[in-house]
Image (cartoon, rainbow, N blue to C red; front, top):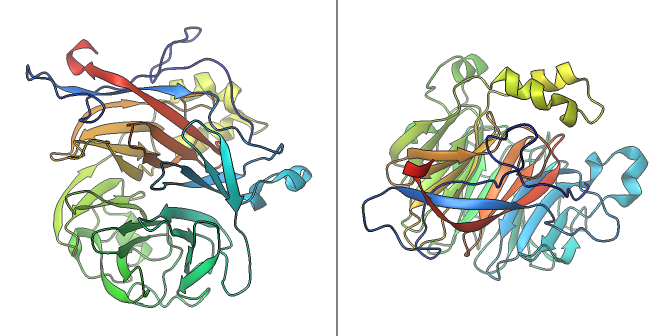
Length: 398
């Protein structure tokens, strides 16, 4: 991956005009809530030089992000997706940077005693600084746990052994992971092969519980049951899982184009449907020639406009109450800002493109204690970006 440099752009860029990318709101530790009752939301500016990749290395498809207790950013990428002619320059799968983008260390890949995934996908660093990794390739039915320096600790499940949505020993192409510190439980978005959230004890790997959409018991629905309903009884593609400070579990159903919220034991609370409008073809066409990367423009537009899969991931604002919830909308290539308690949409930023501040295809997202956001893109995007928190803006001024 090349480190992109150049102008900072906005969520609604006007051709030929360079603007700052801004998003509206306020965050407790990043600024006090307004006293006049005026609604605000956080504002961001893209850092076009983040991160600094050493050794002339290249990123492949960049699937996962995590942040550790020292506020370092962990990037999981797929070396095997680097072009064959550049294979000798492929970066290691796990890369670590500080918040300024300085390279710290790297590791990962096949080793003795564990089954490294065929397609790297999810990464999480827990409160004990252990690193968890999942895969989304065929047969990636396992979850791996490592020390911070990459020493193997534990494997949950075995490659190629999944028995479906009722299996309590194996996952099936799990997308995302989250360890809830207060209970030391591992929550897994088991979504590419299965359609469920499954919870394990993070110390022993023992199964604890699992659930499907609306808190129903997981089952193995037919493809028609999942795809053809506007609000399906089953999850479609469970792609993200996060646990808030108040113990609620936020589950991103990417292909279901919705976010569902549960208690920690799987009791359904509420949901929001996201991205169920067709992307503007005029916007796509206007940027296609700058995005093509050798791919036919018509194919590129078709790929974007047919990506009817919205909620890839979520992240929380940095205040203790986590007043705001950020959602990665893969369908419309934007970050959506919600009031977390009500799931009311406040604002959004981003558009399809490969310039700094744009997205193709938005896949993962994390936030740090200073209120900054970090995003990862797959396919043509194949990069990580940082969006620096710069204050709050009144919604009434937008």
